[in-house]
Image (cartoon, rainbow, N blue to C red; front, side, top):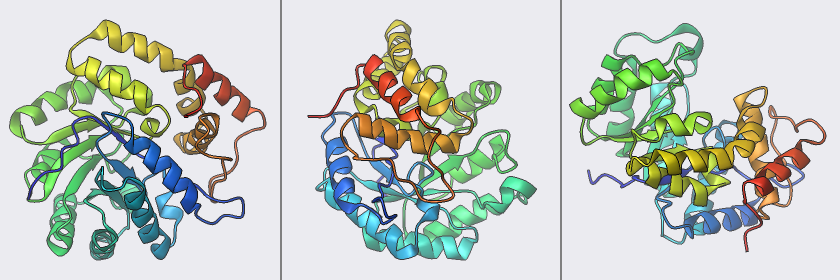
Length: 309
């Protein structure tokens, strides 16, 4: 397996919808082609939380992968969220993603584990089975520490050692664990590409990673590319300046009542940038409170993130 190089910014774009709830493929073309034009963007991850991937029908999921692949014109690999609950159905989902043109898969934990936890060895088995069935290179997805499906260090190391696993998207959101576990993973699995997905904690995590895989990347790719470079250079002053510049955006997108509201806010931010015409979402997501779009637009303007020309 030749690993895909994700050392840089890997946006997780939203899935645009029309006002009547259909997938908006012309908007995908605008969004994907713009992101592909930004130097430092290494891939797009579609059908994730920001992309409302679990809210789509199977044929829609495949068409979204195809549409984003067409939008980047072969410039970037497309990574597909693999989200289904059971191992066998996730393997079939991965096969469909391969057929639609995905270059890699972001394999989600089984959702039942969120409530009940997982049996020892079950995550390793899921990664093994999905890769063997599909041949799709996989990214290890580390969930927040507050959930019961967060992987302990032993599980992370064992998954990372399996054939087909080439990167980690780490969103543990517990800085004690981050500071203790990331150095061990680096030492024990030096070939594993480590990507932060801490949209709301970018500054803390930016100095330890190869890149970022974040929904944030689809609204502010230019600034996040700079922040990743500052992190790799260990330039705290520059990284802090960029963090502070983005703080009004972070507050208005990711410091809302729930992280799911951030998915809606991302669309309003893309309206402010002139990429989307509106912020239609699919249930169970709901519109934000009246006036939120003006707050988000003001935050984007304050950060110097104007309309894309």
